[in-house]
Image (tube, rainbow, N blue to C red):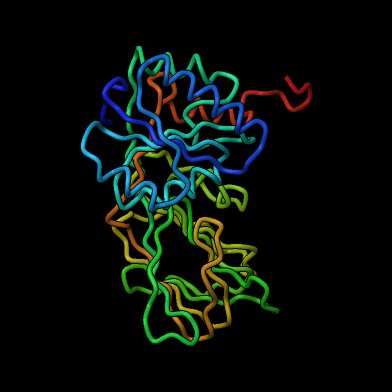
Length: 289
């Protein structure tokens, strides 16, 4: 982990949906920044960010104002520039958040006084050969890459290879390849394992596979993952559809050279405390308390 001094930092503010709650949080942040003489600027796209970063001066942090979906979009925009992101959760779960709306001003003051840490989160690189294209396309993902039947009828049948060695053929709804960060997202809801954020591993989770012996796999993040399509499939990267593949194509997935830098307050760096709070692990299901 790396520490930074908020007083010597300029802040960029990226917001998700335009709602009353978002505007209320934005106003709180702007007032707080003005009172503490901290530079703050709104950004809405990659051009805004690039223009800001060309200016000389202080370290930069991007504030992501919304839910986990907003954080994922922000991380995709900012990834090439290695700018840290602080997620401010206005949604429901908020696994990628450092602060919640209810504690916003107190949380910012605490970070100003006590500092914060920066977690280096691994990203996936996904290369595909889409239909009607002679060139492969490359994408990166913070959470996961999903190969599924999508809107196609019938089963999605794919073959999985790890470091060129065949693992198995999967007839079903598809496969999820997840980072440790993404292990608390789609993969978890499909029976995949939780992976702590500092673990150098990926998980591969089958989607409704029609072979009961095929279970989720955890592999090193240095593994070269190849998925061959034996049927038409759709590809999603962090929940965003990027195209479809016809039978006989390949999807290559490995560790991206770029990562996402996530800002965490000093008192919120405990992974399992976050999991307990977000997934209600310590609550009695019978009483709801």
